[in-house]
Structures are given as C-alpha cells and as structure tokens.
Image (cartoon, rainbow, N blue to C red):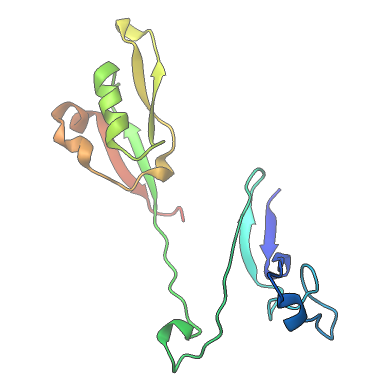
Amino acid sequence: FTKHIYTRDLLWSPQGDQLSRFPLHSSGVGSGVGGGIRPLHEDILLAKLRPGQVIELEAHARKGVGKDHAKFSPVATASYRLMPHITIVKPIYDELAEELVNWFEPGVFTCEPTNEDGHRVKAVVTNPYACTMSRNFMRNPVLKESIKMSRIPNHF
C-alpha cells in the first residue's frame, strides 16, 4: 500500500510568460502543461507515502554554480532523529495530567475522560513522534517519577 513518489511525479505550473520562455522539450517528455521545466533525472525517489498521506510542495529554483556560492554546490546535508519512546509508569490524573499536556508539544499527551478512583481525566501518550524530548516535566517531582523517556535506537 506504500506509494512511491518520484521526480517524474512533479508537475510544473507555468507562471506569467514562462510557457513561451520554456517551451516543450524536443523529447516530448515532461510534466505539467507544456513540459518545459522538468527534472533531469525522472527516476529519483522523493518519498514513500502510506495511505492517507499527501505532499503539497511549492518549489522555487535559481540556477547557479558552486564557485559562486556554496548553496549551489551539488551536495546536501541530511539528518534524522531517533523515535522517542515515552512510557507512563504511574497513572497521571486531573490537574497534574492537564499540566503535563500543557508542558509538552501539542499532541504528545492528551487527557482522556476516566472514572478510575473518582478522577476526571487521565494523561495518555498520543503521538510520541511529536516530542522533542523536552525534560520540563522533571521540574515536578511527581511527574518525574511517573514518566520514563528514551529513544528507540533502531527506528529511523
């Protein structure tokens, strides 16, 4: 169910008089209206999308050479971060749960309604990937004992 997105899938939308300045290539190969602007190599994998995922991209190009500026050098920096692993060791309820939700990036934790031991809401981990590994929760001694944070070493 994974959809592969290649450079050949990029569509060019000419702006202003670009269509007259960049006519259809003699090979007849190209994307979008007129096909004047297209990737040099059309088989480069850009992304792998799962069902429900989409990419919306707006790109602007400017031709240059590396001896003019390093940004035109044909190399790039790539980075990744390890997947956060957040475990709630002891249940977190009510005001403390709401405080925890506000301390982290939106979506990492949410408060779910509960009836456990007469409590209103309970904190649950919703989206650990949204976490930037903030340690603000450690300021509160109760939260410090209730949450365990680590990274999954083999998940990229």
